[in-house]
Length: 210
Image (tube, rainbow, N blue to C red; front, side):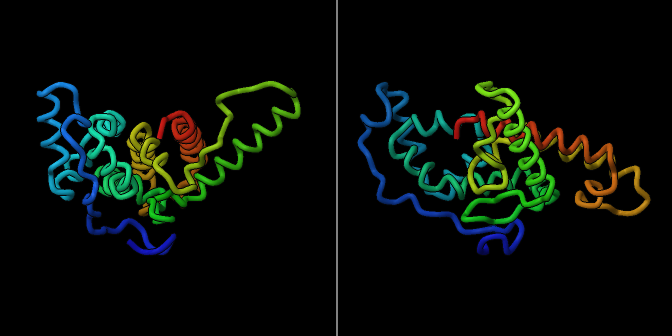
């Protein structure tokens, strides 16, 4: 992939998983699970990654805990796997959100993302001034979508389809082709709905274990 913020979604070659061999006892306590884990951990990296790409992201943690070697492969190549999932399953909405490579992770760069983050951080600051000592978990934005990391994929899993459906619904009302930037700047109903979805995506990013 290209360097930071230079290109949109592109492809790369699969990383290697060599040098992480472990014993069978490290993989599982039962013989049945041991055979399953050996089968997975002994797959060539490219095939293993293809399986992971089409697995639920909620299953990644379970897979990491299944076998020490398998866990190392996933952790060491997490950016590649997450990026591949985005390019494979969420390419349309990722394109709408101006997704680009930043420090090895596909990251949304659409102004709606940073604008929403700035608003929520400002709102949190104002509430803290108005109500000293008051804590609201909904406003704890410590992890941003606009920063590189796995949180973007978690947010796409929950709300990516809604962002895409909302864009298509409002775009149909226009007589000329439109991109998300144009709608966000000129269509108030769409802007309000997209901002709401951005808030929900930020909440997912800050509540999902990564």
